[in-house]
Length: 177
Image (cartoon, rainbow, N blue to C red; front, top):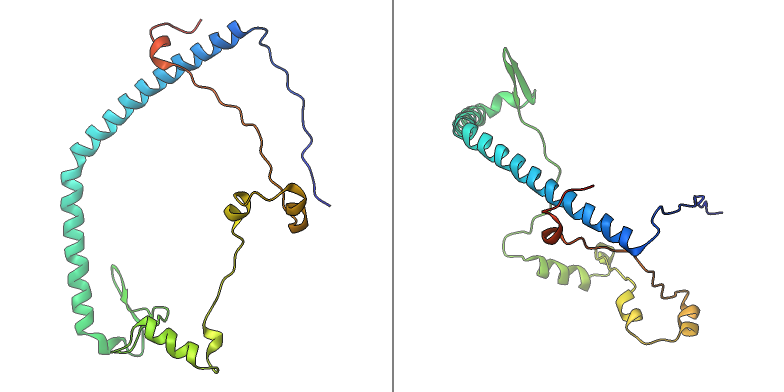
């Protein structure tokens, strides 16, 4: 049995459209102040990035050079990693990990050619996957009557959703009272 959330009844404190309009004004003023604050914050973040980026770029480039140099050295010493896949040193560990297997086509084959070979073989047909899915948009636009849709086990549900739009320009000059 499906559980449902108990709905708590909520009541508004508003008594007129004028009060609704005043709250829209207040929201617009808050949004305007919020946008100004976010702009100031983004400006400070941008300036901090500009101040620190040259140093960070230099350090990252230096680190990448060291990493590449270590990798090239280890590639040259790969025979030392046959028995043990890693080597522990005073300041860290270097090593090689086996990646997960990935299929690649043989020379002269494309994935389309592999697909045709598999489809032609009854023995390997399990390696082709097919997917069927319901075309919900086709059902929505079909013009089917509700009783026909009910036979399929579906129905069209349209719900109202509330929206509002506060006019920031016309109310941002004033303050929230």
